[in-house]
Image 1: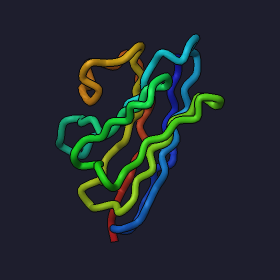
Image 2: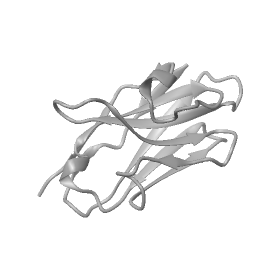
Image 3: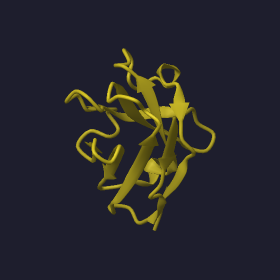
Length: 124
């Protein structure tokens, strides 16, 4: 199993970015993808989650109303659309995968597979 996150960059406050996560090596759609982020000096935190099989997107409070997670099963892709970005969204963003349906979708310990991070900087 491999995951590859991309799409990071520098964006002004109020701007938008879309982060794709490419998943490969899965033998069924019974898995879920979570997005996490880690800001300098802080713990890695869960941002959003989507199951590849069920309609169950989930968002951290910090992401609700601004971020949207979506999937493309045909391409094994998950996208995190981030709008109205704030400086506090600055972090390295990671996508991770878990088989089945994690009980605690925003807890990093639930995930077996991790991609490399992509850096998002929100600054004027």
